[in-house]
Image (tube, rainbow, N blue to C red):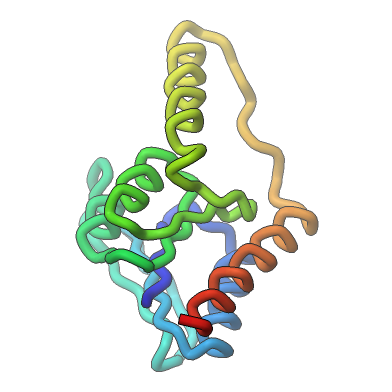
Length: 150
């Protein structure tokens, strides 16, 4: 099983949590981005730079991920695609995406896109804080513990 990271917008603090977890669990972790992303030297951690373009990194993640893998992303359409392939998806804020909640998340995303297109400013999410980092680490630990049992 592999952890795939939509790394272009992934916060540095979350990447650091992932690096420690990948080494501790001896699980492959691959960051995919359309820019160079430095990673620590480790046989478990790698990065792939893809060409620039709309959804190029997302498409690479979808192509590479498999059932049982974990994808770290805040991109809801990407989460929906990997869930369809049988992978798990987790936001950098520690929010798990699942078959049960992804439809509602896609609908809300589309609604917010419509609102922004009509000129309404929604602001965006608040900065990542200690609470969100802890929520992410907890959800990641749950995933890793479950992988160890299987």
